Amino acid sequence: MGDSPAARLQALFEGHRLTPTQRRIAHCMVRRAADAPFLSSVELAELAGVSQPSVTRFAVALGFDGYPALRRHLRDVAPAEAAEDTAANEYQQAVEAEIENLRHLAELLADPAPVERAGRLLAASRPLPVLGLRAAASQAYGFAYFAAKVHPDVRLLHEGGSMLTDRLDAAVRAGATALLCFALPRHPREVVDALAHARGAGLTVVTVADSAFAPVAAHSDVLLPAAVGTGLAFDTACAPMLLGRALLEAMCDALPDAQARLEEFDVGAAERGLFAE
Image (cartoon, rainbow, N blue to C red; front, top):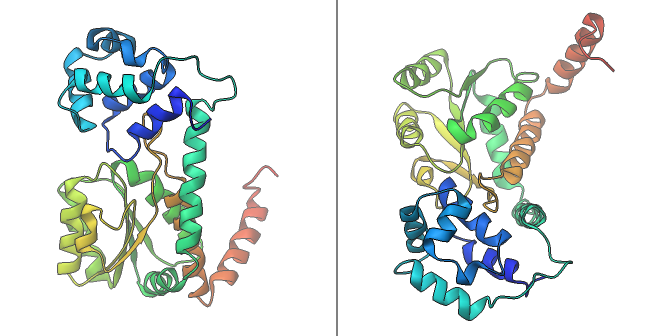
């Protein structure tokens, strides 16, 4: 599988931060791996459903002078040949990449101290603001949904705009001491600005980000990295989601009444017939 044209192309694209349009081109090339070294920029643009200049920008994003240089490189390292029937398709490759991200996360969690410290910070903050915009909004929502079952005052901040700093200031006035932020690419500038504002207001910032070198790192007191998958048109975030759940567990461990709150919820849910099972 590792020597197939598709795998060689996939390896070429890995490690580059590509836009959704550029990923579409990359996926088209992986699907047409045997033909890719011989396609003109116009032909590739038509197959991918993008403009010809987008193909040129794609080649430059990969570090080449232009598309002709990329094509020459492909002819050298990925000669035309039929992909083996046993070669993994792009969906399988994306899953394998996420499995590798999870393995790396497991290695990082061999030292639980950073997550445990973050859990204590979040548990002690009343209220607890949870921030996540754009691609990270679903991660913030998921954390806030479960955290509200054990934490007395969780405030979800998943919409940007001029009200964001107002809501951060309101949380500080209400007694907040920490902020949890989920920050995933592409990183909105207003998230970076919001974290700078939060720290200036006295909040301790705990951030789950895709990398220790993410733009939010400079404004985070505790940064917990978990890589995203980049093999599909849009990032996959299995590792950040799982890290968020581990952080929830650590927060529960730091809340002495967490189990009692969960049991109280379960009793109420049963009385209301809230769930179908």
